[in-house]
Length: 468
Figure 1: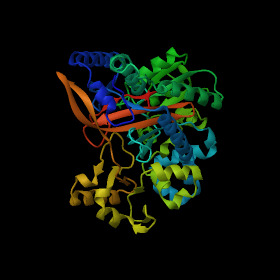
Figure 2: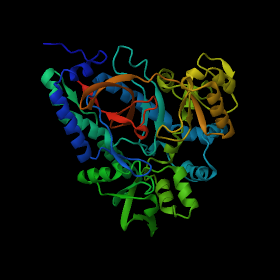
Figure 3: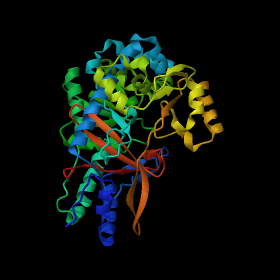
């Protein structure tokens, strides 16, 4: 019998390729059927629905690797929670978080009065891990933190469940010793976070409102499915637009139902835009002031430029030794694009713009606050002229753009069914959803280096393997 060493690269892929073509075709049909039935669906900006492609073989990690990722992301969550206080205490920090005037007013009116230790955020730390090889941890870096409207809370566990139901049993026929298991369910992590937040806020009754902008389609599929799931686990839940929230005798209501807690997809910039158009945001502001929103307003500091605080000696002095160790090992060098003098990785201080202009192949430019992979430019893939034009765009729009050290994005082979199974390469990234109660991994793939579901990407289940 073949001995399968899943610590080695591509062994899970090699195992899958042992399956007969007839079996692979059956898996493909069943995965497509289950994906539609279990709402593994995405709506683009125009409201067009598509099934999110789920790779036909999983990625795997060991329990030890899982525990390491949980530990590091919990340390990073603690570091992230310190940012609001730095923002209020040190004027220079406000330059790194370029809120619009209307957003800044919300932040300054609401956050200072709150106990930052009790603010709850649901974060997803996106990175580039390759789980194979002895030095996997040394090659793992985080790109950014998403702390508002985290995608994948529904998709991730559904992808894992489909994989365990339709693919794992067939793989086990080839390797009977194979032992795969689901990660912590992101939906349960959210459920526990919501219950803890409600308890800390002192509110005992009412519905949990999952709020999503009715004019934004991208996350809309996840919210109704999450509401149905949470109801099934004993949590009174409704889905509404943030503009549906209103006050009645100092209590928060939506669609005639009392609201105890708000889970939000919408950003502060979008709230302010609604307010500018005449929407009454007083109920939502009260919910923020009473610490009844996940993610709290502290989640708004998830600008990509936050990584400047984690990767510059100017700022790392404000963090613990444990946090600095994680920064040094796993955080990519990142700077807000502006005329400045700054330290680089060898400790030297340089003029930022001439340095990144000359070293373009070592960097990537990203819009500071956009999402979905929009506007990302990889230096080595564009001309010097195009790179310089992007830098100028950043300089003309203060706070708009960050420059970040270019990280290696692993390329993996996956079987793709096109009548028969064919090997195709995909860039792979992961998103770690991490809370004190556990963690899970949102695995994503794409044909392009910018890996995102919104950029025609797909999903891959990342499962725990007891054989590693």
